[in-house]
Length: 197
Ligand SMILES: [Fe+2]
Ligand SMILES: [Fe+2]
Image (cartoon, rainbow, N blue to C red):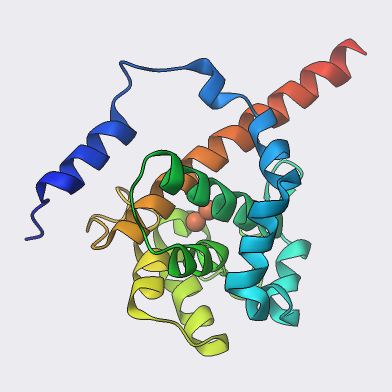
């Protein structure tokens, strides 16, 4: 069984402790700020130019993650949030592998809302099965390190029972939940604006 060392326990406490909950940390505007951040944009290109320019990766623009957010946008958001969490919380995850794993974490390449879509072999259990499908696709299309594979494999924890085994995978697991929450809040805000316009 994987045991957490002191440093890892401290990181977990800082990420999971909600006593210090700050609503500013959940302002969907954060996504726009991260997207507009030139330094972060350059980091994505520096670490993952091959992924970002691959035609196959760009097909993620044709799949919807939720609402009007494409899987492509979602993966960029997760990579950006991972950089931010890693730096702000001083987690010391290896940035390059973390970014690459984050970009590919949802590389399942089908419309998960469409039960008939080719590749969607477990439509009712998408949440449970898509990390494995994404990992299979990503290892076929890119050359990945063990940490990058672990990031993709474990990003749905705790749904998929075994916890992440490296800090890069922990950060992306958190960043995925954080980015999804912000995307959902952004969607709701958008709706309110439309309704009251
Ligand atoms: Fe996912
Ligand atoms: Fe995701």
